[in-house]
Figure (cartoon, rainbow, N blue to C red):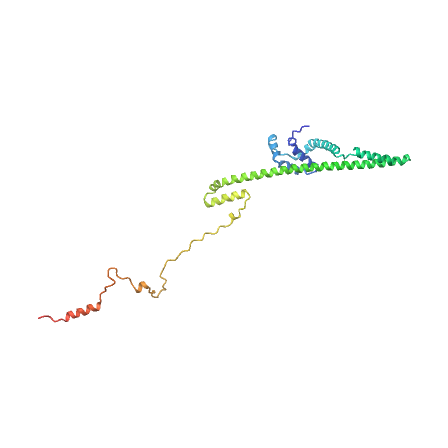
Amino acid sequence: MTHIGKIGRLSKQRRDQLGCRLEDNLPGTEIVQWLNSLTDVQDVLQRYFQGRDITEQNLSEWRQSGHQDWLRREDALNTARLAKHRRDHAFILHTSHFTLHTSHFILALLDTETDPEKKWQRLCEIHRELSRLRRDDDRAARTLIQQERWQHEYNREEEQETERQKAEAKQKLLDQITGVAMVPVNRDLFGGGKQGQELAELLYRVQHDMPYDDLLEPKKPETPPPVVPAETDSTPPGEAPALNDANTNPPANPGESSLIQPDPTKNDESLSKTIDLPLAG
C-alpha cells in the first residue's frame, strides 16, 4: 500500500529507522523531535507540505497504518532470510545427514520396547526432544539474522554520520572564508580605525568559536617618553650663586686683542715725568 502522508513520503531508509524506534517503544515526543531534526525530512516537508513539521498526531496515524504494513513486510523478509539461512547452513533438522542418523537412532530405540504403551510414551519423549531442538535451531537462526540486521544498520548509520561530519566541516570552512572577507566590511561598520578592527576581529572569532579572551583584556596605557628637565638656577634664596668658569673668567672683548693689553701704571708714570720737565729758555 502506498502512503502519501508526511511520514509515508519519507525515504525507505528513514521509514526503516522509524520502524525500529517504534518497536523499541521510544517516546513519541522523542521520535518526532528526531524526525524534524533531519535535513532530508525537512526537505520533504518543504517540498510537499509547506514546511509543516511532523506532529505526534501524524506519528500516531502512521503507527496504525504504515507501521503495520512495515511490520508485515519485515516479517516476510525475516521468514525468507530464515529459510535461506537454513538452506545455506543446514540448520534445520530435515537435513539429510542429520535426519538419517536421527531416524536410525529413533528406530533402534523404539525396537527395544515391546509394550505398546511404553513405546508410545517413548515416542512422545522423542517428539518433545525433537521439538525442543527445532525451537533452539529457530532461535539461533533468528538471533543470527538479528545480529546481521543490527550490523547492517550500524554500518549504514556510521556512513551517514561520516558524510554528515564531512558536510559540516566543509560548511564550517566556507563560513570561515566568508567571515575573513567580511572583516574589512565590519571594521568600517564599527567606525574604522584600531577600535573598529578589534571589534571586527572579535565578531569573527565569536562567530567561529575561536578564542577571543586576549581581545577582551584591558589595554595597558602607553607610557609616555621621559621628560628631561631644563637647566634652571637651583640656588636657594639668600645665597650667592656658585661661580663657574664663565663667572671667574669672563670672555674677552671680541673687539680687543687678547695679546696686547694697556698697563695703567706705566701710563700714569709717563704722564708725571712729562709734567716735571723744565721749560726751555
